[in-house]
Image 1 (cartoon, rainbow, N blue to C red):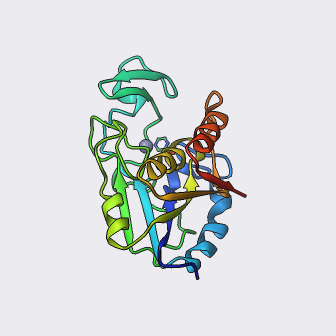
Image 2: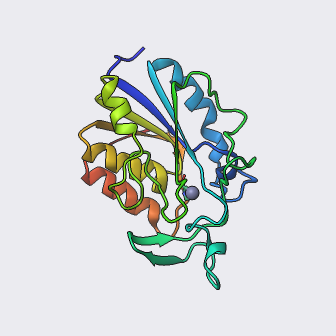
Length: 202
Ligand code: VGL
Ligand code: ZN
């Protein structure tokens, strides 16, 4: 068991990000046994769940003439457009059935406001609107976080950058993550994480 100052954050292991899902990450389900095993080492385990309303602004289908994986300019910055995914209450938004959920004390849902996406578990994509995870972790005396899940180059990566910015010691367990890798996004995010002082393991 790790010291109680360490938390495990499990990012978006949901059906839509696993093979067969609407925004499938290659081998997304392959990390599940490793993530399940890690849960027993941490006193604090938090799961996140991408949780969009129908018609969310990150969906290409919400922008007439636009296609998935294009970038558009939003008030808060550039936003990649995605296939419709993780719609609240849908099968695709549910956790993968192989993921252990009982060890988690909290589930952070994100991306639930129609007009703004939220890759990070800590802040929405304006990088300022908090999800509440920072306060939850601090209130429990957590100072170090280990991140696993999907996808390395988006939700895991932005969560790691925000956690480092907030002053947590951050480790990303790469063997328990998988990437979307859109136009070099994986290499770019690995470099940003390194530069931010994130420890990359595995
Ligand atoms: C994610 C794209 C859109 C992720 C979520 O979990 O990495 N990526 N929504
Ligand atoms: Zn999403």
